[in-house]
Length: 236
Image (cartoon, rainbow, N blue to C red; front, side, top):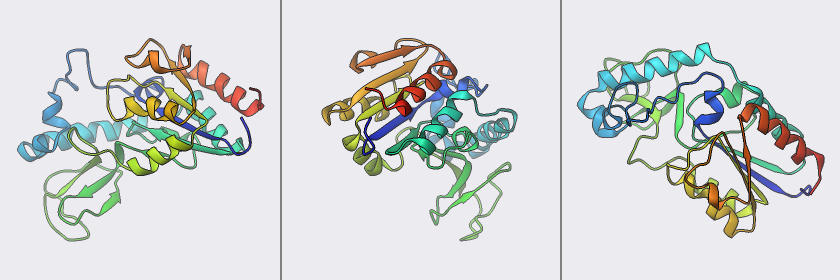
């Protein structure tokens, strides 16, 4: 890895699961007993905003009970100490990367600690519970605040920035991602087409494992610190 190298890291639910963050989506496709279209789609929010707010209030409150783990901290060390560019992208909506010390994180699916007004589109930090009776501080409209989460059918955030980083990458690493959700599942192909070496870190084989040059099998808390040590060593 040269001083001018760009490393792109993508993290998914697996890295946060080791901190105790529930992945919510069960094998039967339900999220905490709810259909995905009821709690993670614009149509569900329109039908029953109270249910959606309750669902995300519980998730937001749950962040107070978890802490960043060794994998989060290792990636923060990489951002701090690597002489080139480290672009950290996460599919997760928690704040564990930031609390683990990362200075710059692209939350492509939004953040639990932010809300967005559907009337004026202003995004604000939000730490407490949210409900449909609250008014936007900007436009004063009642009932238009929603979690700033990218729901199914919506376009992930900062895709232009992400695709630009993938085309510059010399190394692309996917950590704890399922390979189910696009466009993130296609990032490995974009990186490879640009000449990057690709590495997957996961407990088990995923739907896109075949596309990676190298796989590291095991918990992120064990494998990511080892990978970061190698990236900072300067060895080929």
